[in-house]
Amino acid sequence: MGPTGMAFKLFFLICVAVAGIFGATTVTGKILFIQTLPALLALGTLLAGI
Image 1 (cartoon, rainbow, N blue to C red):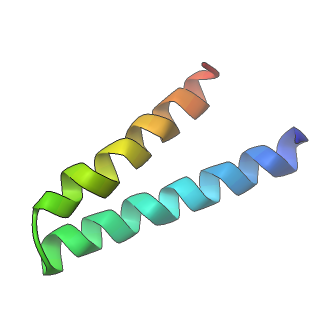
Image 2 (tube, rainbow, N blue to C red; image 1 turned 30 degrees about the vertical axis):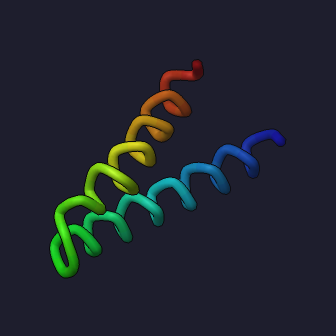
């Protein structure tokens, strides 16, 4: 996908993580583990190049 694909993946993983953090603070803390943690793990592996 090239550099555009990398930017696309980064943008949407960050959006998912931010939405998870917002949901965890406003609705229930369980959202932090269900949505935010997987997004951050995926973001970390993407940036590590795995």
